[in-house]
Length: 188
Image (cartoon, rainbow, N blue to C red):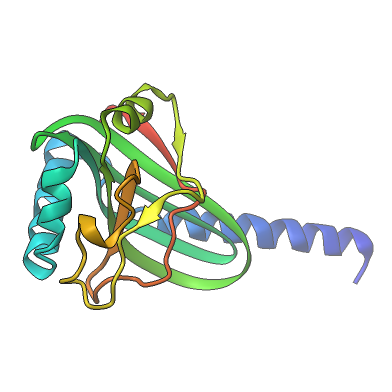
């Protein structure tokens, strides 16, 4: 195979991988507007609270929470994740957000999950809302337990400004992280 053919082959591979990743990220939330996102957020929270009732403690102690009811991650060498959700303060939606992440490396497949970011201080919530795009960093505190029912504000660092709970159809995804995920305000 000639060098020119190898370059074209690589470009086609990368283009195909990006196209399949983008297609897999169409998680059914987009396009229908705020009502559809709110309905998915309500359903996601109802499932979280019924399966892991101790998360109600986190909700009660937080000043706001970003609920991402469905995140789709997919990749074949080059990967990505995408989802849409709502920021709620006092159980009222105040803004809508998209989340996106990209990754490169040995990866094949797709995965879907949900997560909630609990803002435990007014300053953390203000910084999130004031940013043009907020990225989850390595300092994000996770309230994860394979027992689920033991998740509460007491199981985490009391001073953590933002606490993440990652969950899905099959239960909590122990070891999953949100590091590198970028959240951007949207108009649905």
